[in-house]
Length: 259
View (cartoon, rainbow, N blue to C red):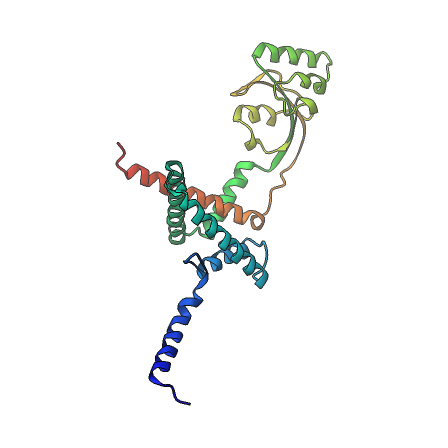
């Protein structure tokens, strides 16, 4: 079989046109939806572990993108894209997307090293210490009220009963219980006051912090149960990344000419 010139030209046009047509997921009222947009959505869904790539997922994504394009065209027809508030939201979204791209590029060029993560973990361990303390407290407005509570405790009153008058509403109902924690979890004046107590003892004098005046009781002490390095390595690495990004941002702001 031989092609006539006209037929050959039509065949060549069809071959050339096919890849371009295949790049479109659909065409809605003359507006093309590129297949790459669907690929990006599917990739994101799969990466988030929501569901695996499948024909069913791709069909669902296709329907959603078509519906969004229909709604978008309707919104533009009614000039919602020209609304000042919408424009501001679009600009905010654009800034977020572009800034996120900048941050990803920065982190790719300033990757966190394993030794940095290990050093941060070791610093955390040293700060947390090797002991955990089970502490209760009663929070009062002023030193006089705190001293009055201490006097009642010395006279035989139960700590759990007096804790009901605590200004700390989160612990007043359960005897002032702050659960097990490392000293580093508390303001220094607070932790300094209880680390020297014997089990079952209360502070002889009120302890002042930014929250008010505290009467503290130490229930018990145990060896610290810190997570292993491997258990928290991803979280520590992420925290270091955030520190690097914060420092990078502060550096750029410092160099910027702000009037």
